Length: 584
Figure (cartoon, rainbow, N blue to C red):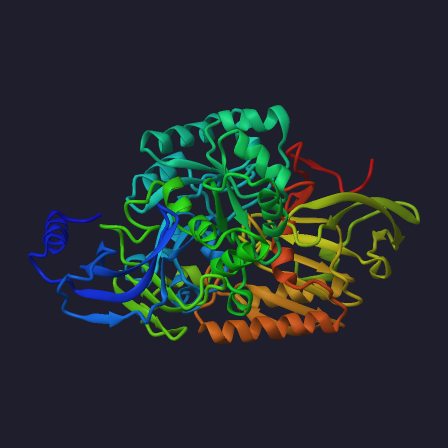
C-alpha cells in the first residue's frame, strides 16, 4: 500500500511542485481504458506513474523511448510458481524479458508438501523481487482429503490468516466436489474471502448445466479449466470470468479465441494464465507475451489482446489501483516494444527502474536462504523394490482400467484393456503403449502405493518418475517393468526430489529438485539444460510426449476427469471416490 507521505509526493509531482524521478519521453502510449494509442511521455515518481502526459514536466532523469509503444506489464492470472521448477528468486530472468511483471500465484504445491511453514518459506523474498507476486490463497490443501496422503495441510484457520495478508487477492481454485457437496469448511473459506472483499477462483472442469449453475451459486468468480469456446461461453453467460490457459500440457487458447473472434464475443472478462509451464518452454516459446501475440494472430485486435493481458485481469482481481494500466498512481511497470502487431518487450521497467534492456534481464536477484528442513522432504517406506509394484491378478488375463492421456490437455479418458497376468502379476503392454503407473507415498507417513495403468507415454522400455505429482506430490512413476520403476523411485529419494529415467535397472538420467521435492536453486540456464537432457533421454527410449514430466505430474490429480491416481489408489474423479484398478 502507498503511504501518506508517498501519496503527497505523488500529488506534488503531478502538480509540478517537485520534479519527476524519471520521464520516458517520445512513446506511443497504449491506453487500456480507452482502447487507444497516442504519443505521450510517461512521468514517474517513487516507482509510480504520475501521468502518461508528462511532456512539460521537469524530471531528474529522461529516457528517450524512441517512438516505441509503451504498454502496461503483463499479468499471469493463475500460476503455481512451484511448478516452474525455478525458485521465485531466480524467475525474474525468465519472466521480465517476456514482459510479465505480475504473477497471481497459488503456492498449493509447497503447501501440500510442507504446510503453512513451507508456504511462508517460498514467499520469503517476495518484497525483494523484480516482479509482483499476489497470492491466490490455497483453498484445498489437501486437495482430496481421504483420497490421498500429503505432507502438509492448510486448515480453515490457516487460510483465513493468509487471506488477511495485503498481498492476498483471492481464495485459490476450489474444485466442484467441495461446493456441490456443500462442505462447510470450504464454503466458510469462500465466505471469509468475500467478507474481506476478495474473489474466489474456480476450477470447474467438466461441469455443465445445473451443476455449473450450482457451482457459480457457490460464489466462484472464474474458471481456468475451459478447454474450448463452448465451455468458455457457458461460464461467461453465468457471470464467471474465463482465465484462458496456455501451459506446457494444457493448450486451450486457440480453441477458445477462434470462437471469440468468430462470434465477436465481448472480451472484457477474458484474460490469460499459464497455470503450469516449464522454464524451457517459457524461454523458447514465451509466457503471457506468447498468448498476446497468438491472440493477435488469431484475429484479436492488438489493443484488445493487451487489455486481456493487463486491465481485464487487474479489474477482475480488484488490483487495478496498483497494476494493469499506465495510469496515475499505478506502479510504473512498463514495456517498450517496437511493434504492436508482434509484441517483443525490448525494454522493461519495474516500479520505475529498468530491469530489461534490449531484451536482456539486467536486474538483481535476492540471495537464496531456505530452511534446511525444506531440503529433506522425501522419506520412503516402500517403493524401492520391484516387488512393491506387483498388481496381483487371477487367471491368465485381467481386465483393467487405463488412464488414456488426452493430447495438449490436462484431462484424460477412462478406457479399459485386457492385460496378461504372469506369475500372478498383471503386466503392462508397451506394444500397445500401455504402461504400469504407480504413486508412492513419499512423506514418510504410511508407505502406500497406488497402482493402475496409463496410455500415451510411448515408452518401449524403461520408466520415468517425478516427485512433482499434483496435488499430493508423492512420487509418480510410469514404466514398462517393475525393476526400472523401483530404480527411478530410489533415485528420487537419493536426490530428495526430482525427475528420473531408468532402463535395464540403471538410472540413465536424473534431475534434482531438492527444495520440497519441487524446486531447484540452480541457475535458470542449468535447470533448462538438465530438463532438455532428461527429455532427450526419454525420447531415446521411445517417448513421444513433448513435455513428459509435466504430463506425468498431472496424472495423479484426483480432481481432473476422468481418472486420477494417488497413493491410496485409483480415483473416479466425477464420483470423487476410490475404485478398483480392475474392471468389475
